[in-house]
Image (cartoon, rainbow, N blue to C red; front, top):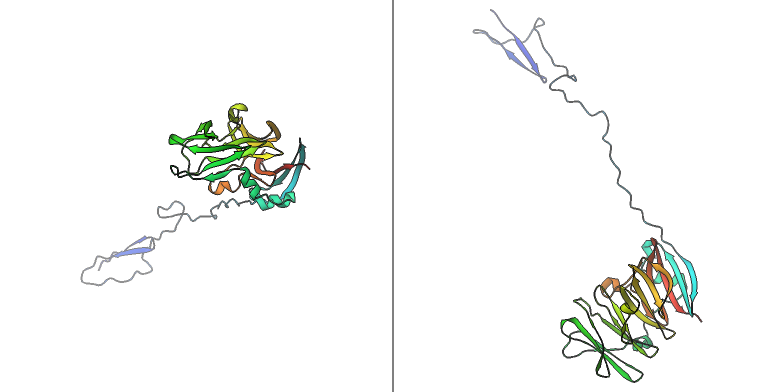
Length: 285
């Protein structure tokens, strides 16, 4: 009986085919020919295994600056002292740190300060408070009219006026007395201004903005923006260095680190040449 054994090996499997008549298929003998596939780089079915672990790029670590604060400058301008405390970026805007650095209590409004800034009252026609202050017997009052027009009255007559714009806070901030003159603080969106004795200080000093007026030694002090930089003007003259930024805010979170003006002192936060500072200004006794 003629038997034909054909073995096909493919991926570890074989196929046995037998052509026989009336007999069963038997197992291969030693004379059978068996073909096997040994994996090689030229095999169609060969997939090379990785020879090395893929390179993993480590995550860039977050570097937290070491907290520090230190007195960096003490100077005198006219009848004022100027203190500077340099702080790390993660201590910026922290008033208690500034107080420790200066060895001073952080100034806060007292009854005396509140009286300087005028009395707020509510007109029937307005949802935001207006301000009234009596200075040397003259009564000054503000009023918000239609289309964001603000008017300052002196004894019932128009003394000054300015346009504002839509804000989520009242731009009508204060009526301050400085050396017997009225100082009107109007935080117009994008271009806050100060009107001193009827004169708009943006025009008077060629400024982009004027912020947070206060009185030291019966002289006006405030933060000014000029040529996209920030300076402090005192009695019409710049004191101290130029800052790239001074923190300003009228509402919500930013209002918490806006300049402090109370108890005969003027404090603020500023950035100069990528370094962070707290500044305290007060009367030099």
